[in-house]
Length: 254
Image 1 (tube, helix red, strand yellow):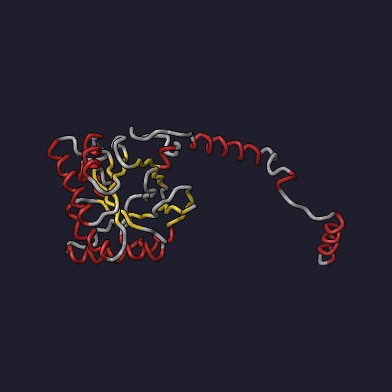
Image 2 (tube, one colour):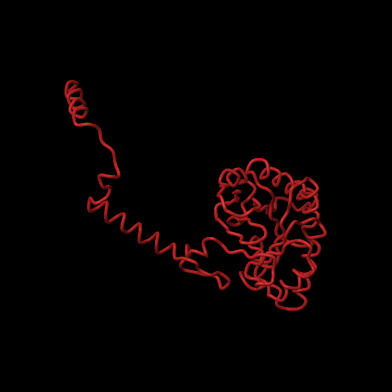
């Protein structure tokens, strides 16, 4: 049984590859915090431990490449990752090439890219027009040519995902992009109802963890207030003679 990397928000990738993704990309000053908060869980697949590298620390592309490569190396060394995930298409090819050249596997991420969601007009379908879809197709080829080990397509039309999958020589993973891909990804929290106020269209709930947790907490509070919990089988004592001796020793000091 191998291990799967999770960064703050746990993501389950049911696919040829298994991976995870974190909460929104951290600012540079919290690299230390993100590395330390990286947690490892076990899954019964053959996963790739992966983290996200998204840092906009400089306008100089050469400096960006060096920054990405250095940060990716830190996660590989300190968080025991097998690779990193990088959002963007042709504009990040130089960074992908540099990171891959350093011996670090890279997963690409196209379509709805959360770190740049504001420039995309919010959380919405990407590639609805032929021109927009062509850019995603071209970006996928560029990432593959740059050495990406796999590509995540998030929230693009299923036909576009199928076309990219047909042309690709690396695994294409679908997140809300239809069934015709090498594998599927669902957010763990969406799968089990941990965000009850909003469930994305592409998410299917396989359980209601929010209700289970909420009901459990209510029952716990009620049992504590009602002196029902903890029951005798859930705590420990000492022999009566030892307790009496303890009281004698304490009383002797008063």
